[in-house]
Image 1 (tube, rainbow, N blue to C red):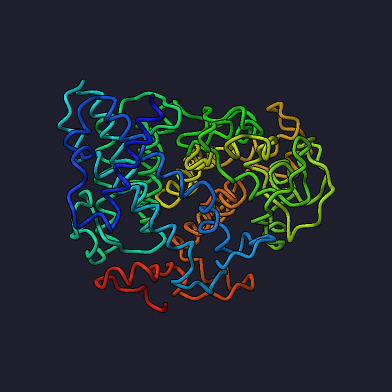
Image 2: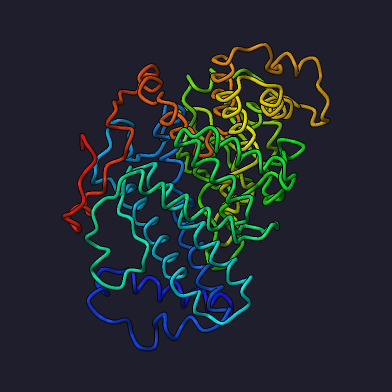
Length: 484
């Protein structure tokens, strides 16, 4: 019954967001006035927002955050997304744009209609907080990728939303922070599997402030998450990426995928990331080999447990006994962070979640902001060294063995400039292939320099993606980003 309700609301929302449906009133039996009557209707509307958001993270997100940098390449695929050679006609940009605006429209429908439903006020506010959080997240992805975009805050019911001009990036960031501040004021202090919580809101606020270069607010929000003790580092690195331990203490907000669900609620993340070298015993199906580490990036990482465990260059591996070296070689080492050992045998796709925000990211955001404000203080060192201690723990015993310390020693005795660069490098090592690197390079004004120095010919133009060609044709008030 719950799935039928979700399918119904998604169908309804799809209809009110389609261009061909804009010129007529929705069917009398399917509209917001007679749908939003009960708490079950409200719950279904929020589930629809989450469901639409998943489309972006199921198989596309790594193109934008990782393959568009010096960190990774397309592996063995023939993706048209080539660094520095983007075109407005590329379908991945249209998918990016469309998935985010559908999510925004679904959130707008919920935000407009939930207040009129008679139900427990605290529960109503919780759902409204989630809708605002998800809208903020969608706009954050858009503004990072495209810059200023049309600001739509009402459901699409007529032609009005179709012809809005681009707002400025500052205006979009203002909306994002307003939505997050609202969510922060109403979401309860509790854990929730796969749902927005107040700690997810605070962590996302820290990321937004960091992207804007506001170190004071970044420090404040990340410290609130740290001091709450609700989330912390998983004791051992393997636990972070073990799909049987998803939504653990380190996972602040993850996009949920269910590979064993008959409705096809899985993703293709595991098979895209894994090398074509491995073959999974239960099915014998090779992976897509859609992303690989660039050799220069791989070689720039000091040899230590985290590298050996999460980026595999040789097969078989003692860390993944279900892998055997029987397939053709791939163009570079592969990331195993999203490994599902049963991929290819599940009914609905891969089971690995996409970790949008985890506690290690918060620690590194705090360390960077603290250093910018006060220099490399003891608390800044502690935040980074906690991550490094776990990263070198080959024996998974929480004890620093001499060989482990030699491979990845604690940071100490650094200047402010040296610590800044050390944190940047730690983010690369700890968060690689999790979709953060492009945005880190852009916010620190290193994108062009780093990519050019690694043989990737980009310019200032490439710091933004092109507005999709079909969107420009549909809306004459849109202006293309410079250089496209």
